[in-house]
Length: 269
Ligand code: DGL
Image 1: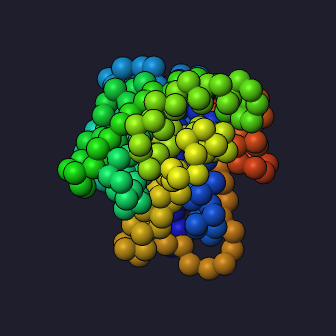
Image 2: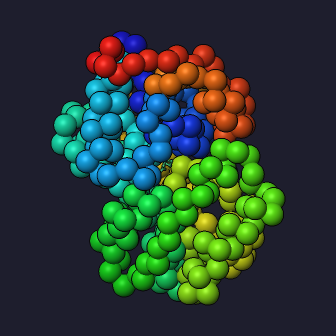
C-alpha cells in the first residue's frame, strides 16, 4: 500500500513556514502544498469568503488522496476549521488550537498576547481557544496587517520593520504579557524584530512548530506515520503564476522549492 501524503494549504506563500516545521518533524512524509496566490490575502476577507475558498482547496487536495489536511493559514483556521472538519472524513488540523495550547502551558503571569491578521483577531479564535483551556488567562490581541508585506518583501530587520513592530507591539509590552502568540503564517519570519521589540522576558509562541507536533501526534495515534528513513517528496500547487511564490517561498523555506504547478480550481475541481 503506497503511503499517502499530508495536504497543506494557505492563502499563499506563508504556509511554507508551517510546511518547514512539518518536514523538520516528519522528514519521511510526502506533502502536497496548495497556495491560493490568485486570491491572497485572506486576512482582510469575510469569514464566508474564506470558508468558500477553503472548501474548494480542500476538495482539490482530497482528490489527491491525502491522509490528513493541515490548514496552515491562521485566518482560514479561524474562519473555516469547523466547516472543513464537518465536510471531510480525514483529520483536519488547524494552527489555532496548537498555538493556544502552547501559550497556556508557557505563561506564568497569566497574560497572553496574540497577534494576527484582521480576520484572525476579529474572529477571537485564539482568545476563545485559550479561554476554553484556561478561563483564568487574560488575552490581549492586536492585528498587525503590515507584517505580512514586510515579511514578503524581506524587510525583516531594518528601520521600517522595527518602527512597525514598535507601533503595533508597544502597547502589548506595556500591558505585561509574558507570552506572545505569533498567530499568522508570516510572523515567524519577523521573529527577531518582534522579540527585540517585546523584550527577552516575553516568550514567543510559534504556531507552526506546535502544529507540526500535533500532526505527528495524530498520525502516530492513527498508525498513519510513514516508516523508514527515506526523505519524502514535496509537491506545490498555486492558483496564480508561480514566479512570485517561488521567489518568496525559497526565502521562507530557507532552501529551494521543488517544481511548482499552476492550477485552476474550477478546471481541476
Ligand atoms: N496566511 C495568512 C494567515 O496566516 C496571512 C496572509 C493573508 O492574509 O492571507 O493568516
